[in-house]
Image (cartoon, rainbow, N blue to C red; front, side):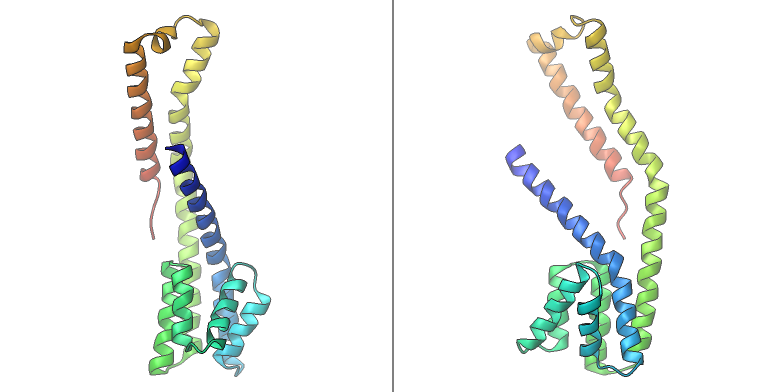
Length: 197
């Protein structure tokens, strides 16, 4: 179970960190494109500025979009690759704005300016929710660790008191049931303080 779950958990954690870094920098990248478009630069050149001057991982992802165009993809197809690599709602908003502008025209700087504002508001909301749920997370951590701490303290004070849980078959059954119920409780508390946007 550990051989199956631990690598998946590690990859999911690294993926989440990558996506969070991307979301932190994405509004700055969109605003840089808006400034470039307003000064008269074509969209490609504005994206090239983003690929050159912004922080990772936005820098490398936008460079990949430009590479796709160099291989002959249209802008609409190239930004779809970005969405496949970073499948987030915020990236989907960006892809939709670019795709609609490429197909139907319109004021790109205004649309991207509105998008940058929406991205910043979503980021503020996520930070507010994280701050409000931090107390519940701390409570969940304390409640989840309390039985283990109590068991360790009892074992130190009276080593023989909990030994039937380990040495007898019935105790082992109850210990396994307790471990399962603890895992279920931690899972439920974790889901209660996790919010999707």
